[in-house]
Length: 254
Ligand code: PGA
Image (tube, rainbow, N blue to C red):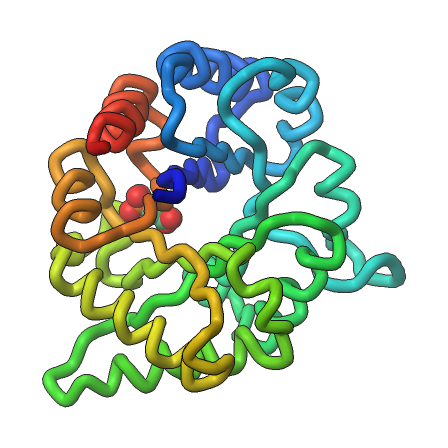
């Protein structure tokens, strides 16, 4: 059985390098016994270098929350895949809904997936509908995100990619509710179906993780009933107690 993967999305937190270091060290201490679970911390890019320097021999690996797909050039304010690699990131969150709301589309995500694979960075590709409707139109929305996002990606690298299903209505402090494990499983099956239609029935499907109000009360059900391969965690990843409880619970499901 492949390892479960837990990704901490710190977003634009914490506010200082000192706090970031403290949080990173405390999390690592609290998960030092973990063997069956991969833990990835995605801090603001400005903290990566410092955390890379202390991450030697620590459990958690580092990821970025974004980058731009070009290798270099006149792109004011942007940072490339290679630049975040140099800072220690081996994973990257792509197409998060908080970026899509600022104008990023699935074409951009497609270019970023290709750039990350080129630089040996594992892409964590976020997909998710803004709302659910009785006619199931949200499924076409997800299909489009997948078809455009994965366009012209070689099927040989598919299994390296991680897909994070994060329904937008379940994310952050304005969430209406979290998804149910049954809704997640239905979506995981749908994702598999769409990708096998594009890449062939024998293709190796990426791991599919859940994100959106993940907490210590819902993780076990998402794995046992929803067959989640792991989680992308926002708020709870900034709380050492909550986050380590989640990681240790997932670790002990085996
Ligand atoms: P949340 O955020 O866990 O705070 O809902 C998840 C995310 O945005 O990745």
